Length: 233
Image (tube, rainbow, N blue to C red; front, side):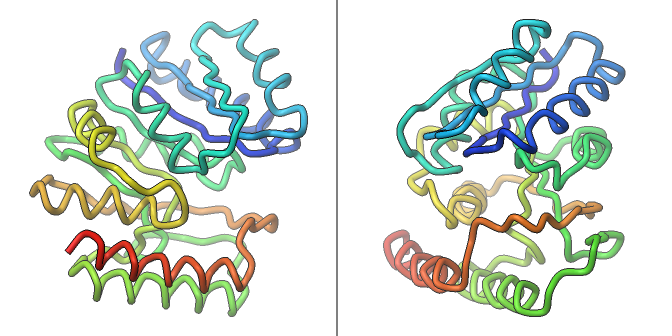
């Protein structure tokens, strides 16, 4: 198994059909049968699970790990890490913000890195359509605070497309403690402390209108960031 792709999904009945269809077609062309897509519906109250089950009946490469209670995106990804069989294991958002072609660039450039993270803020990256000013500013603020607190040099810790070696995910499963908005920072902080080689790679990102974070959520995420840093000094 060359690649495992994890897609956490919370009430995604409208968007996940296109995401699964496109990723299936693309990965079959690139990797034949040497991949799996692990969909992790989490606390869904719509038809996400039923839709994914229909896909899985026709496509053996799709695995389903349904979690009927809330564990957050991070919790869903970690559960996916636990059962993934690929030599490389990645995750993307269910909203198709990252196209299969763009995610696969991480895999194509894996070389001897322990992980690769997609970035919307380094040279070569494109965000379309252009983000609203308040959304852009809050994202920049979060990233600047993150880099100061953790001595990172990343331009974008929060992009929802990342890829790691299986060995790295095994380490992350044992040590990750965050399931919410700080989840990505937690992964990168653990990798930094273990001196793992992580590459930030430019991506073409489609910004979706259905943001799950309002202004209060963003403020809480920044406060959580401080609490997490002081907890892991």
